[in-house]
Amino acid sequence: MFIAKKEMNMFLVILVVVSSLISICWRGYVASMLWDWFIVPLGVTKISIEHSIGILCLIDVFLSSRGLEKNTGEFAVSKYIEQLVFSILLPSAALIIGWIVK
Image 1 (cartoon, one colour):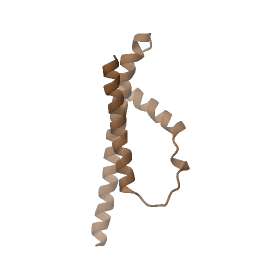
Image 2 (cartoon, helix red, strand yellow; image 1 turned 180 degrees about the vertical axis):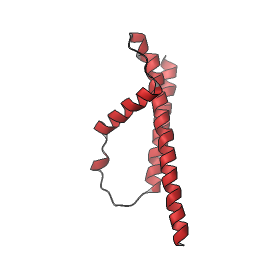
Image 3 (tube, rainbow, N blue to C red; image 1 turned 30 degrees about the vertical axis):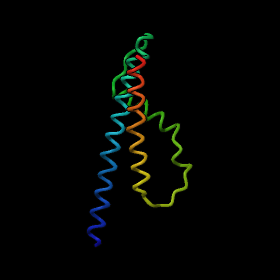
Image 4 (spheres, rainbow, N blue to C red; image 1 turned 180 degrees about the horizontal axis):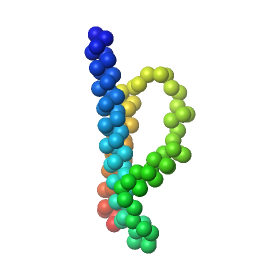
């Protein structure tokens, strides 16, 4: 039983890391595309996906409210899945709307 729980915890850690990296890269791609479509025509320099990831991480540092939530000390898988779904769907919706508008 102890081994199974330890393996499950390791699986959750790997899942969190991999899904977070995918989410960060997707958000960076979407931000880069939206920048290319709407900001570059104004005469501003094009940015790469790496730069947009950096800008998004910087924004997250200053606008994050993670410290304001009550922490129970437990890792809620359902809460993480909800956040992961929104971190994929919201940029996707922005990309679709941006594509329609451009």
